[in-house]
Length: 479
Ligand SMILES: Nc1nc2c(ncn2[C@@H]2O[C@H](COP(=O)(O)OP(=O)(O)O)[C@@H](O)[C@H]2O)c(=O)[nH]1
Ligand SMILES: [Mg+2]
Image (cartoon, rainbow, N blue to C red; front, side):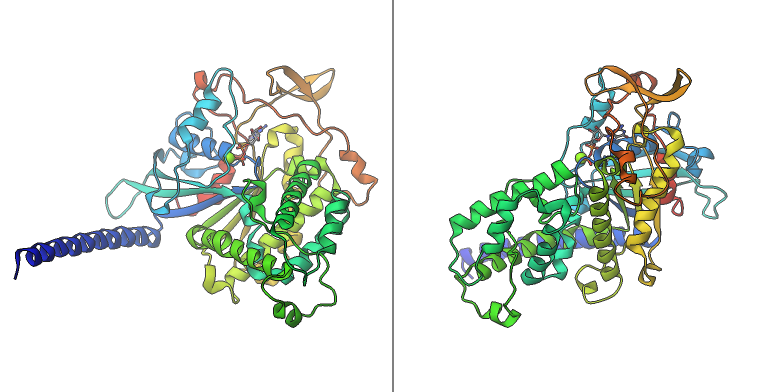
């Protein structure tokens, strides 16, 4: 053998050895991961909600409460009440392949002087929280155990894209034609809507014109969110970044059978846009499901119920529509043809109305009732029997205090500019208003946005509302 061959062989040998070692390490890590799951030592929880719902703030509060058991007030979480919660350590979630959640920065904002809200984030992140618990009377003789809570935070806008997996472009166009015709959306962009309706499926596509339409369509989605507080908007990523997904619906496909549409040549508007749609689903939606969604054991969905309620009937209807589609997502996941694709293992689905500190304590229960009613309607149906649903009303950071002024109960806090203010909220009723007139009850101004309370750094605790109850729903059976 020549010298060159020998050195080539040894290099190859080294490479093979290196690969084997890496494989071994991966298998070991993976089997450890599987074993932890089987032994109930690891729970992967997804936290989602539309932008501004309060994900980053809740994550920060949750991590802080669990890591500071002496200071946290968590009587509704049994291990804390019984003194079994010893603390928690934050570690990167290396398996997830996701960027870490910037806990330090979020906490620093809340604890700064004057306190600030965490910067808003748009992307997904993950973290592992190793929760140390005292074990009571256990046969192994070990007196502590560790539960690994993997927290994955992702935009709720992405969840709104999952229905796309069940539709082809033609179905999606029909779906959008129906939605855009509803009262809540129709008036927002009449010009765009007529342009989309006039787009001839068989005409030759003009990319520049389609791009202009995309820009207008994206603005329309932003307006649906900004002006009407609507939730069910697709493609969801258009609300989060400025990429040109080029995905617009054609609103009038009447007179075309699916065979006729499929037979159109590649240069036509229909084929061009259908390809964009398939690309979006393949490159954005499927990877999200594959890499992320299907690894979750539990899913927590945060909703700004108060903001939606004060935005009016259409906003609430749209939120329910979003819930309907979330329900379908889990319905298909449990059985059915999409099961193979994502097989979600989610065994608990929780919804929480956030920012409950914006209304009087007497209204907290009604807030929860209202959320429950919306969920009941969306999730009605025998097929959900296997997936337990839970709901709560929480405030990750309680920013208000209650007091009495001139004989009336009021909330007191600071607005975002730091001005001290007292306010009353329109009473939250346990039922959704029946008709337009009854909706006038919520037509006044929504409760103000509040600044986090000062003094958290000095006192070392983050005041909250029912985060302990939420923890109990999330982890009560695992600790
Ligand atoms: N009053 C109150 N406001 C909150 C609370 N949590 C979040 N917010 C408000 O909601 C905004 C968005 O919260 P954030 O956690 O960034 O939401 P994300 O976009 O879902 O991560 C914050 O800037 C606050 O104004 C809370 O517990 N109480
Ligand atoms: Mg965030």
